[in-house]
Amino acid sequence: MNYYVLTLFPEMIENGMNTSITGRAIAGGYLSLETVNIRDYSLTGNGRIDDYPYGGGAGMVMQAEPICRAYEDLVQRIGTEPRVVYLTPQGRVFDQRMAEELAREEDLIFLCGHYEGVDERVLEEIVTDQVSIGDYVLTGGELPAMVMMDAIARMVPGVLSNQESGQYESFQDGLLEYPQYSRPEEWRGKQVPPVLLSGHHGNVDRWRRDQSLLRTLKNRPELLARVELDKKDRKYLQSLLDRTKTPRLVSAAPDDDGAVAAVLTEEEQKFLAKLLAI
Ligand code: 6GU
Image 1 (cartoon, rainbow, N blue to C red):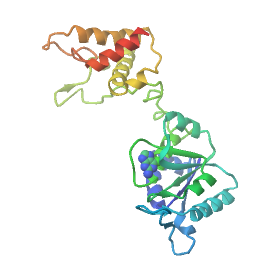
Image 2 (tube, rainbow, N blue to C red; image 1 turned 135 degrees about the vertical axis):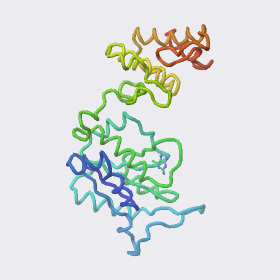
Image 3 (cartoon, rainbow, N blue to C red; image 1 turned 60 degrees about the vertical axis):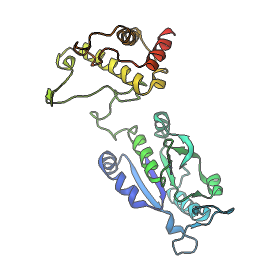
Image 4 (tube, helix red, strand yellow; image 1 turned 180 degrees about the vertical axis):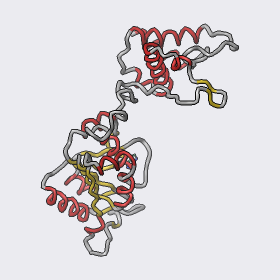
């Protein structure tokens, strides 16, 4: 995977991407990164690349021509015309599926905007994909570009070691990941869930699946609605409803899944009852 980034802050991209796992992947040749400083393509040669917005209003707008010249110089040099991703809160919201799709490309260009935005005409001219990373506003496209490059890099063969390439990670099967524990067995009075010390792999796998279901229900119920539930999944989710309706004594020990009596809110109960009725 070859990444190209058009930006006013190349050092921000270089510093971020050359760190940790993406840095190792670049050093190992599994990824490449080239940043292009849009300021080097200033019309006036004085480094100015923005101007006042037509129609008035606050802020400045990045001009079309410097960006287009930076882009045209790049595609001429690399001899291909890759997809061009423009980072903007107005774009389609990035998700794991989009990461998997983009990971199939050989080359990707990211265009990072700043100030109030970029002249619309250059977007029409060169951009193939407008992407947002979520419903909040950032000061520029550099962090979103790095978020995308990181998520895409994980899908590129060789970037993750076997250890790191988790089949069990969040979203792989549409559920959130289960909790993890390491030594010591007791830390500040908190015990590791006994099932994880039992050595019974079947029970461990079941517990982890149940924890994934519980977390997804509590934090991202809309994801749970799209997951295929088997008989054992349904049995566990039903047990949550049952335990909520018939709470144990407050003094009783937590259940084996760490979920104490009366675990579900009204809203969670309603959601689950509806889900299990299907
Ligand atoms: Cl892609 N850019 C900016 N500036 N802010 C954002 C964003 C992108 N995604 C969410 N907020």
